[in-house]
Image (cartoon, rainbow, N blue to C red; front, top):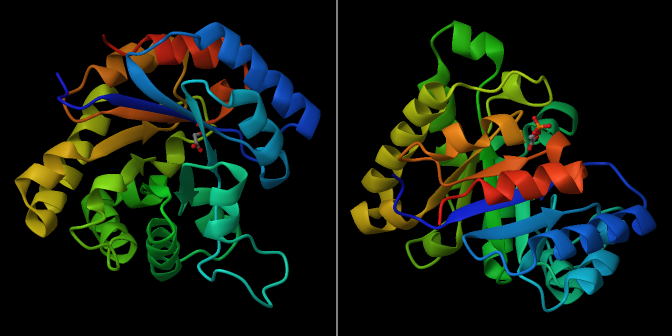
Length: 254
Ligand code: PGA
């Protein structure tokens, strides 16, 4: 059984208008009122952050962004900075999601810059990594996640590591309905914790939460979350339905 408090985050991706986002947040607030067995966050689009933060103010559900830029301000048309996210009420920021790597040119190096920038302004980054199907078939999974970790953590010192969450998201499991088996996920989570131990020592590695992401649903959440090194979930599709997301949150142990 994992030793860490579970952390369930919903990644709403490019879904829902501002009013739809507020409505979903209000539903979740009502459904999860008083639930204390896990940390919970939702990550709406940038334009809905203010409304969702407002709807969740004073609740147990925190708000996160789906990305950030590493400069604080300036001539960077279209970008959003960490201090802006803090000002709107964010606690978390997802960095390095595979969709950003796949469609928007994100590299291990830029993921590292974003993670460091998030920490510099007081945010808690959720650093995503994971192999493609091709990489898994070639037997390269461990090499890929090691390389991704080296890039993402290059600017993260021991003083900041306590605010970091990792999300292991095998690309072949994202949005496909095919989740990694609990054993497949546990194997990689255990490997990642070993890398963390080498870099930051056992205490920091034991404290850091590693979420699993990729087709997490109410039906498979409990089995995944019962693995020793799976400390929560980053949920895409199923986080768009209040009932499903609340059911996943409730599958966390007490
Ligand atoms: P999914 O997405 O739950 O829809 O597979 C997970 C993610 O991309 O974070």
